Image 1 (cartoon, rainbow, N blue to C red):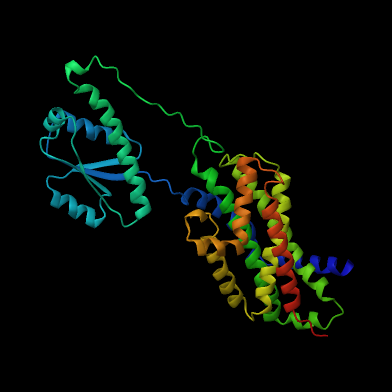
Image 2 (cartoon, rainbow, N blue to C red; image 1 turned 135 degrees about the horizontal axis):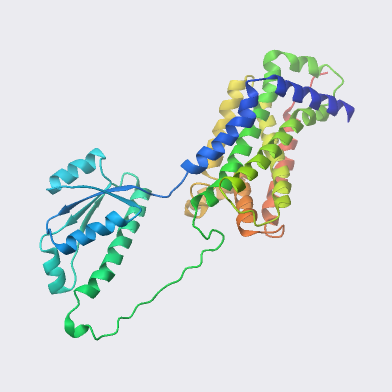
Length: 373
């Protein structure tokens, strides 16, 4: 234990002595959590909408005013012709064009129905789909209101029948997207910091030539590895703690479940990531190589973690691959515990899988590390 203690002390001194590493460890993750949590959102606001009013009646103007009153739309100038609107749409000056046909009010009163032409910039298909939902919602609200105003006198005695649905939003009552994103982004920061630092740590010893000196000492392999990785395990737990504090104080993310359960799972999860970083460092000769390889795995893990794209929406073969992704399990667990209040029994499967990964990866990392006497 004394040997491990001395190695840990040496690693901590090395970290604190490296002034360039300290901001990366402590400052950048906090800034990234604050910035990414506000930037990484699928909410669509400030939709630039324009219109072509070929009718110029009170009903057409009332329809336009509905969009002006909406918090999602930003109504720009009216275009005189469809050609001008198409040009603006192609240049990216607007996102949606509403084409109100001639005799819109007359046909609506006469036939009790009419249609509108809507043109959307669908380069970003997901954004266009959300815009279409918002647009249809405004039109439906307008349709309900106008149907009462233009109804025939003989029909006014008929009782209007409406079905009102009252939704109950569980786990995120305010529908705040940050409540969903912040826990996942915190997982990414803990993972990236632990993987990159552990992956470059032993490689740095190779580059400066101190690894050979350590290899000829009586230090045993397991002592060296534990002493090397333990400080980064502690750093990962510290980053998690600071991230949880920021999530609660700045973003008001609830922590419904047992916070000790998050720390328990994180303790095992960090063993997986540190083992992976050690495995990478054993097969690389420079910090640049270690960084590239670690970043390659991180990109794949992030995209297939379910953080930005639901795993249920992926193809079957991709869903099976995500079973090998440790980030997937941590994202699921931290959301389940923080937002739903899940207990140990609810995350037992994820905990078992993560424990298995920890044993396998660390065994491979220790086996692949060659110490010459």
